[in-house]
Image (tube, rainbow, N blue to C red; front, side, top):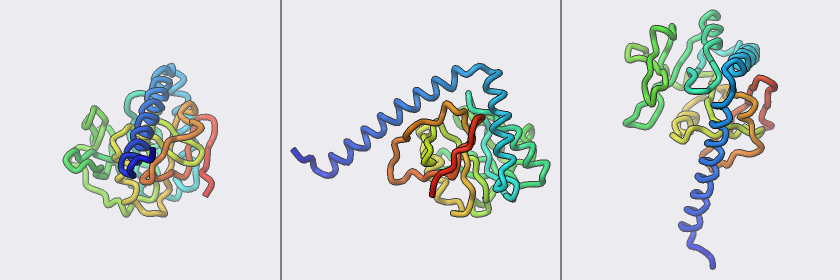
Amino acid sequence: MTLPLKQATGGVYSDMRNAKRTLRARILSARDRLPEEVRSEASRAIASALAARPDFQAARTLLLTLPFGSEWNTSPLFHVAFSHGKAVAVPRVDVAQRMLELCAVTDVERDVAPGYRGIREPLPHCNRIDPSTVDWVLVPGVAFDAEGNRLGYGGGFYDRLLPLLPLTAAKLAGAFDLQVVDRIPTAVHDLPIDAIVTEMRTISRQR
């Protein structure tokens, strides 16, 4: 029996949500089990590889994220960016609009504090940054594949933010190698990133 289009579409999206939920739980569990010393060493390797990229070195305004939970430690990237005089934006969640505000951070110790769901984000005194000025983006995620597809945490915040950034902005992800999988379930609105940098390799999306 052929289902009405609405029902069929609903079934497909339901299957996709379930597939994403299962994959998200599996990767988060594996990431959480990484020993602290392994996570620290891998984080240094990821940060070093990202900072050495020509697109990072050429960028004037970076959008970076601070680590949360068992994510890799992004702090070294902040130090490199500040030492080279780059402008650094960090996202802050606008719960009412379900959007990310981009705010300037010049001192991580002074300018950020735990906010939405305990994630560190800019304090109210930080000035807003226009998304159109960003030319390099560190995109967080739970899992990634070689096609540049990413699996986020399920809130959809970056799905809504990425289309607002310049098409020319470099979109990179740092991740532990165990976060790279064969295939990420994707929908039409899911935008791919340019490359994933792990402690072992860099995987660039084939355009």
